Length: 135
Image (spheres, rainbow, N blue to C red):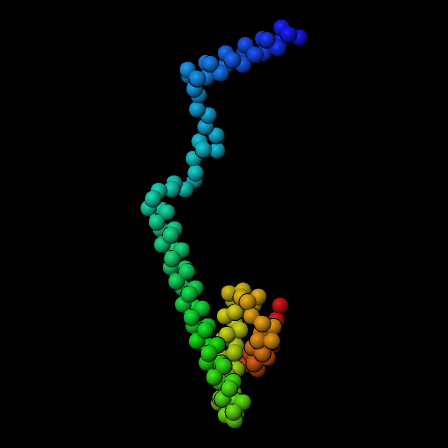
């Protein structure tokens, strides 16, 4: 048993000593595989530029939705205060439908109160001949 243990220690020391004199660099195989799409700094810059453009478009859409929401609030307030003409009601339901469609298209329903979404759904369903489905 002692002889086996001492032999193992000798081999271990020998392998460590030889590695120190001639170290081997192990490269993972996944690093050697070529990608189908060559990447360069230019490609990475294009990706970031596309991300900036997409984010900018999304920000513009959110700003437009905010303006529609402010417009809807004013329309609703005017309606409550007595401006109950057919034209005003028509503008109000079209605005509500635009807001609801923007919220749905961008999957933002989780950000809004159920009562607000219910109100938009109600008015939006008046704007079209079909009812608006709520998830």
